[in-house]
Length: 295
Image 1 (cartoon, rainbow, N blue to C red):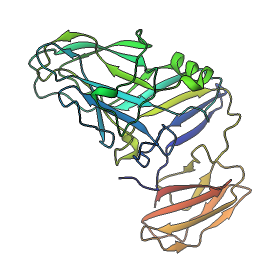
Image 2 (image 1 turned 45 degrees about the vertical axis):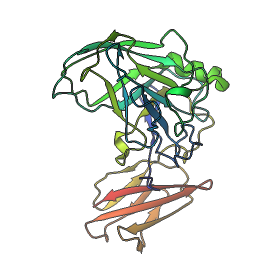
Image 3 (image 1 turned 180 degrees about the vertical axis):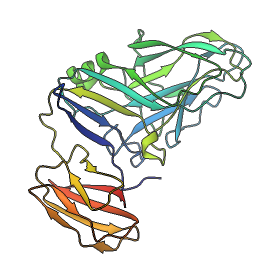
Image 4 (image 1 turned 90 degrees about the horizontal axis):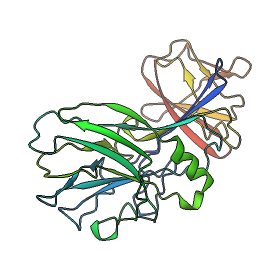
């Protein structure tokens, strides 16, 4: 489920607005209880009161629901992002997720308001069960998000700028957050906040932070995802890196292929490459990024 070919951070300069857009999208990590929401160690899970001893830390989805008073079938989603390497000064930060649809049936609790609550104690995504849930700040930092059946949201983004700033100002208090509805009713195929997690095998489906910031101090080019365009390509590929220290190409079978690079134009000459899928391995500051490219 985990793969080395994880590209989860984008860096785009907006010339007109002088803003930098960073997409921080962690991969699933090792799922050994040590993942804390870093770029290569996504941290997300959920709990189900109906199965209080089950842990869902390695699943590809997370669920939150209203509170149920006719059964014990209610859930809470949990997420954490390690923002220590991200900008201190931001214009806006949104939490992006890929929802899965709810269009088949709903019998009760078919509309509810959902909220995001700050966690105030530590939790382990691989050990979280009903008996050891983290404590929560009573007032939500986001909401209400009204979810009504039927729905098929796809990718949605939610503004959490205030909470991001809190995490940056209080790094020792960043325990992530939980999502659910405090609405009390009978859950019978009820509405839910259901999204893909960092363990999803499709990288684009994973939760992310999109950060608008005028500054990138403390963030190296290789911490941010290098951009290579066009993709698909034809006779050349252009890099956005100012100082490309080392690289190599392989085909889909891992065979190395010689491709020339002009540092002045920041372009790879790909005229000789046959049509197909290629992997570009880029190295800088002891970091490696692997980009899939198509001709």
